[in-house]
Length: 320
Image (tube, rainbow, N blue to C red; front, top):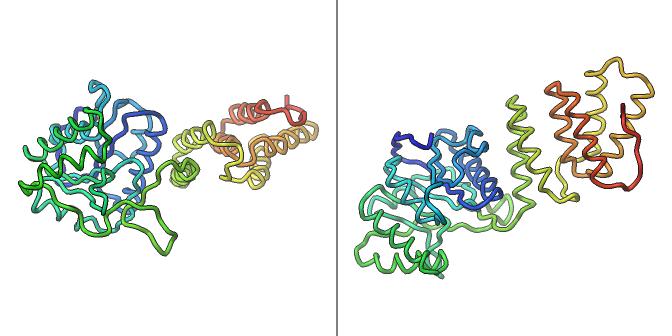
């Protein structure tokens, strides 16, 4: 996929060039696009092009930045531009979530400019960058990258480049409402929502994505996403809810193992209730339930044993 030359008239461009959490955030940014724009081509520029999460079905194009050390946002946008995979692109920061039902006004800003950015009273926002595939846009991106590499923060770096280019009318501002901002609630949903530093909300988004995969009978991917959240989440993070899962898993074991004797059933129930205390958010319990649904009983038991060994608040018998 990293070598694709397919060109799209318009696409959404994302970048992930730091760590695992950046990959997760990029996945959720793409998911926010796909929810409202199911047919929009989505590309990602990343230094880990072989990452399994890029195969989630959300991404149409993966561009490798593995040979570009310390790549910044401008480098990644330039790499995608030079690859020729789009005529016009909307680049979203991984902290951004697209909530707009209509992106035509944003793309229309490129009718009179090579690059368009969201502007506020303090200057341009690097959260959203629109670009056309032109030599002038490439020059602007190179200038932005140079400012970043010179030791300036991303915002001021972009600000300096835009001020320098404004005289040539190569830069336009996005229409009102396209500045990324936090949501004030369901009644006040911005066109682009920013979610910086909110790990709990990121985990909640990942679980919503996993739930969608589960409802789509994509058990393997759902289990993988649940596992990623479970291994990183805080123990008190409310997610699936262990009380509901205990009854669900107990009933499923009865279906998968109909010959389970009364002593083993008592041991299993004791283990499940102990797991609920150790894993109140239901992270690992959710994984155990998914493995049961996939018919992987031994793996489900292994997950329950894992929960038992997380802490030792009180002993609980383990099923044989």
